[in-house]
Image 1 (tube, rainbow, N blue to C red):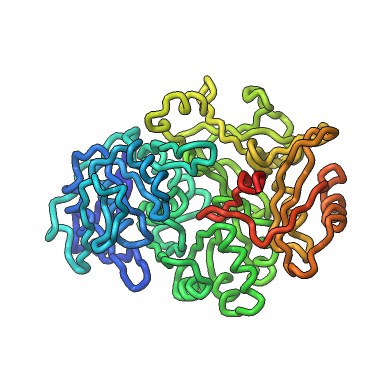
Image 2 (image 1 turned 30 degrees about the vertical axis):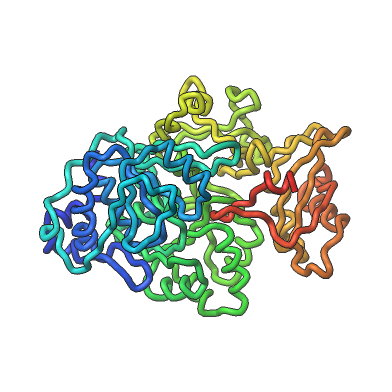
Length: 495
């Protein structure tokens, strides 16, 4: 297997070469070239070499990026820790992953739950060459060697640690390079957290594997997006909440519209981007946001291609090397109809998959079919040309009403087309006659004059079909969301 970061390997071998002078990482006013990144990562790599696993206090800083790169150079699995984790969750992750060290930026105060771990401070000295700091990093480990242990959100129990091999990281990033025509000339801007797949693997390791650069905003602000895209950034990664704020800001911010129009690629992920926001951004900028679909356990599965049709509401086609199928409720019978209507569970097979859930052979076995397909729990339809459209999670978004299988996602998009709706979520609840009735949770654009339940039902019936209309409407000040902007529907169901 080739090195995960060819440009960094070259900088280690030739610290005076032109490649070592290329920009790699920038967080605010702090930055590192490839040579400086090599100089910072190499001694840390030597320090952690031989450790079983290392925890990384994953703040949105240069130090986090250096720590993860150093662990990967050393062949030691990194366990990124969410700095916002509660005491119980953090305690579970540390006990489950059993790291021998915790890496953190100097002067960062760590919670008491990490007090039993030996701490290694991450120091960064700009201008130091790799050869001044330490010898070159060791040869890359085998493709199946663990690269990261990333913990799931734990919505149905304690978080599970997905063991992600080096093979999956390389396969996903190379497949995205093919789909997005991603090269070393690209400059990525984002403000995503660094304790999960989107922000860390795609948003930091992705540019480094290509030999390009990333500019992290620290905290998302539309002004930062405008600045970075106006100063040469070519790609923007975000979650729907960020793009919603962009869509809301665009009418009064021509500089933002101009900056977005310059971007080569606008990518949204981690949750579905409402069609309404797609259309508002396209109308103001002439550029369409593309979506991709992945999970902690699978990394990336599908994407709209840079040279494909940026169809709003879809997550594109399977990435190179990834097999995707839809199955019936029995989990083994394939859905044959590519008609844009027949709903099935997405199952995935390919080099992008995780190896196992750490310490959970039962959960690992349950997640896979006998012939190696991973059960995602996500429900989708496929259009005749193969485009995949996610309609929701099997557990919370598949509503069986009146003999129909209905995906919550399409109803949410229909509700968002109503001018009086700012945010919308759809769930199902038991109904003696229908089996389940459709329930809408609405944040009104004008709380003093919300759209009536009848208006909203008519909106959906006109846009989709009468049997997909909500039977119950609840009005909220805000929808409950997690750090990635995903709506926490289990909280709604128990509201």
